[in-house]
Image (cartoon, rainbow over the protein chains, first blue to last red):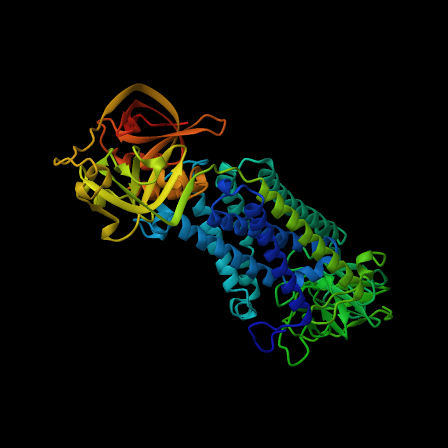
Length: 363
Length: 269
C-alpha cells in the first residue's frame, strides 16, 4: 500500500509472476528464432534481423492480447485475479519488447541511409492518403508512444501524483493503442505474409479481447439491473426522518454473504459497495483509491475491506486505510429496517466515520 | 447470491501466500499459456514465406578487376575475378543504403579494381564496395595478367556499351532497390520493406523492376529513364515496393537488361 514509495515492493507472488513472464516471453522468442533458423534450408532463411523483428512483434502482440483479456477474465471468474495483481509488470515487460521491436526496425530499415532514421520513418512512405498503402509504421509508432507513456507512469508514485481518475484515463488508452497495433499488423505484416495462420491469429486476438469484454460487460450490467433504486426506508424508521428521500433499497441483509458486499448503483454518482460483517452493515465507495478496483468484489479480511485487485484495505466504518497507510474512500449512511438494507446515495467525505447498521436492529 | 460459487472461492491477496487451490489454478494457467505460446511461436515461424535464395557475402571480400562503366548506374565488366563472374557486368553499390555513383563515375571507362561483398540472386550480381579510398581504384592494364600475357604493346580498348533493343514491353511487378531485394535483406521486397526500399533508392542504390512469374522464378531489370540514362529517382520513390504496371522499352546494355521507362507512365495496381 502507499505508505512509502519503492521502485518495486517485491513479494513472493510478484517474483513468481515476473519469472513466469520472463520465461514465457523468452521461450516464445527462442522457439520462434530456433524454428526459423534451424528448420529452413540456410539458402532460404529470412534475415536474422527481420526474424528478430517478427519474433519481438508477434510476442508483444500476443502479450498485449493476454493483458487485455485478464481484466474481463477476472470479472468473469475470480480465480483469474492472481493474474491481475501484477498486471503492471506484464505491461512494462510488454513495452520493453515493443521498444526492442521498434529499435531493431529503426536500425534495420531506417538506419545507414542518407536520411536521419526518424525522418525516414515519416517520409519514406508518403502514402498517407491511402488505406492499404498507409505507412503502417506510423500506426505502430503511435501505439509505442502510448505504451511508453503508460510504462513510464506505471508506478504508484504517478498514480498518486496524477490522481487515480487521471491515471486510469491515461491507462485506458491501452485500448486505442491495441487498435492501432491491430491496424499496424493488418496494413504491414499481413500485406506480405498471407498464410491464413497470421490473419487467423490477428482476428482471434481481436475476437478474444472483444468477446471477453462483452461478456464481462453483460455480467456487470446484469448485476446493476438486479438493484433498482427505490424509495427510501419506511417512514417508521426512527432515524430516517431527515434522510428518507432517495435512499436506495439494497435488499435483505441476509442476501449479502458474510464478509462480502453487494454493489448498488445510484441513478447518479458512483457505485456503492454494501458490506456485511460481524452482524453489521457498512457502505463505502465501490472504487478503490488505488487503481479504482471494484471493492464490492473484495472481502472483509482481518476486519478490513480488502480490494480484490491489489489487496488495499479500508476500515468499513471510516473508509480509511489502517495506519500507517493513508488512503481514504467515501462512506455512506446505511440503515437496516426489518432485515432490509437501505443506503443514502449521497457520499460523505472520504474517511468520514459512519456507524455501521446492526442487522439485528429492529425498526 | 450466497450460492454464487465465486463467493466461496478462495480470496487472493497478492502480498500474502497464495491459497493452495488458487496456486494450482495459476500454475495450470501459466503452464498452459506457455505451452500455447510455444506452439504459436513454432507455427508462426514455419509459416513464413520463403524469401528466395539471395546471397550477401558480408564479411567475405571479393576482388574484381575489369572496366568501370555506367550502365547507367555504376558497374564493372569483369575481366578477372571469380570464374562465374568473368565476362559479366556486376552492379556496384556502397555500404549501407547508398549507391556508388560518386565513387565510380570518375573511374568510368577505365580499367580498375573493386573490392567488396558480393550480392547475388537469379543470375544478377552486385558488389557492395568496401569503405575507404582503395576499394575502387584504377589499375594499369599491364598489371592485369589477362592483358599482360598477350605481350602487346598497346593498351586494350574499353568495352563497347553494346545495346540490343528488345522492344517495348508493359510489365507488372515491383520497383525494388537492387541491393536489398537481391540478397541483403530477405525478404527485401513488399510493403514491410517499402520504407527501406525508398531510403535505398533515395541514397542512390540502383532501382530495378522485379517481375515474378508466380512459380518462384523472378527477373529483375535495371530501371533507366526513357533516354537510357539514370531514371528520375524522385519520380519513382513513391512507387517503391508497390505493385505497379508500367510501359517501357527493354534493351540490353553492357550485358544487363535495362527497362527504359517514363516514370509518369507508372500505374499502381
